[in-house]
Length: 207
Length: 258
Image (cartoon, rainbow over all chains, first blue to last red; front, side):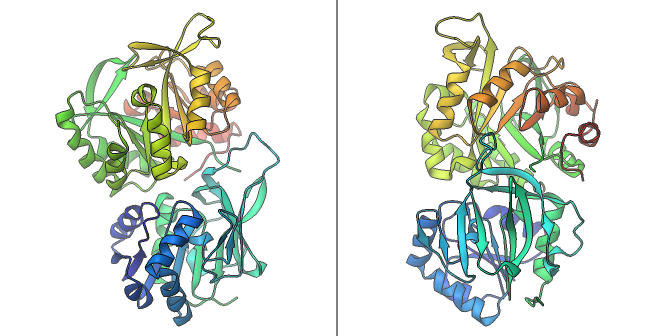
């Protein structure tokens, strides 16, 4: 059973529908106790880091996620949910949850013809093998829509990168946590495969 | 590097697929859910569904179509047609759409763009504009005018100005649909597309006139569009998504190959 964290940040139903399609049981919850005791957690999110943190704190979900993380619960952060597991975001100059030391920065590209947000399908370049990438092929593309990107303090946590003028981290792995900037729920069969992998993952990661 | 996107638009009337030629003479050509699923499996990058139902009594049918598509299609998809308020937009998003697509209603009430952008984020708001080529005038310096109501009502607004305004108000993407090219399958309006790309900094989806993969190549290179929208050439089975992508790939355009 996967618990999808609900904190009024974006459309959770698309994650739910993708899991339904795969036949993976899931529940949407905003209850900190349910989240702290979840078997597995997907932490999605679209929107603004500052308002997301406010909403999480008001519900006590930030602490519940920390508890779950410390217990070894497999957690997958997606998009905003992958950014605010770091310690700080430039978006609204916000202190974020801090499961992974590092920052979330805004794209500042030289080529002004490149639009921000970075939106559309782009290739990922896997740097560290991880169970989450099982059965993916080199050159597989995933769907992105974001204006900020993550920069973990420890570069060995970068599982995959993507290039949009600059090369940035698009998937992070640290212990029982994986965080993806792209949206598996909108990335066709490749994204569904990653959800399937997460559903099968035991949370272990040999660095 | 981002791939250029291939997007298809399904016009839906009373829950059935329809395709118009020059915005008139629409006829039913099948089940939109089946088509959406078929294109998804073929590697389509994004889907647009446009509700052209005339009677507001039948709007609920579209929500059901959106819901059924969202259960089987895992690529971004936007829904437009008849969205006049943030509440209308919220309904289609909850039914499973990723983005909302506003057109005439935004021309009549530009604040709709700002309100939707504030409520759901700019990435969620697509401004679709129907454009007609007209003589250059003081009012329409670019020679491209915004029209509404399915191309019937000229608004006296310059298309380039409207595109810029839309971006300022919070649109995250633009669909530029040439009424002159729509349904002709004779190629996109390259000049119009390029002018709007150069005047704005958000992705531009070219629409209207795509009849061959070469047309798509032209609008993605010379026209500088981020995405090409195709309808007739797919709906009538003249080309497949795969064929279009293979053609673009072979000519050096980066597209997502599946």
